[in-house]
Image (tube, rainbow, N blue to C red; front, side, top):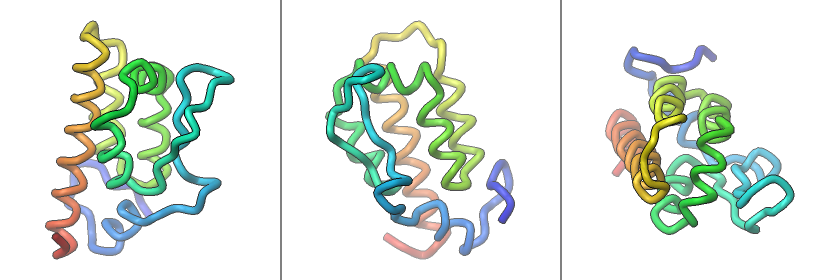
Length: 119
């Protein structure tokens, strides 16, 4: 399946992007290398929800490493991966970066659900 970039994704692509992944494919949050938080997200929607209250230092850690970008690409959404990746290296407060990543993810989930005819 081709990755979704600027074109409108098909319903099958949307289903793939919004799928719940197995625990081994989930996004596992860390505060820093070797310091797991014991939290993980198994879907894009769950990631968006978790970003509301996750420690902003953890979000900054993952953002700067490109972890969110890589995981979203694995789900098949190049458009969102690029959007999140564009936040890397920004000189903004950690809380603001967390909010920006979370907003981007939640807005994309809403857009994809609309394409799929879901609420």
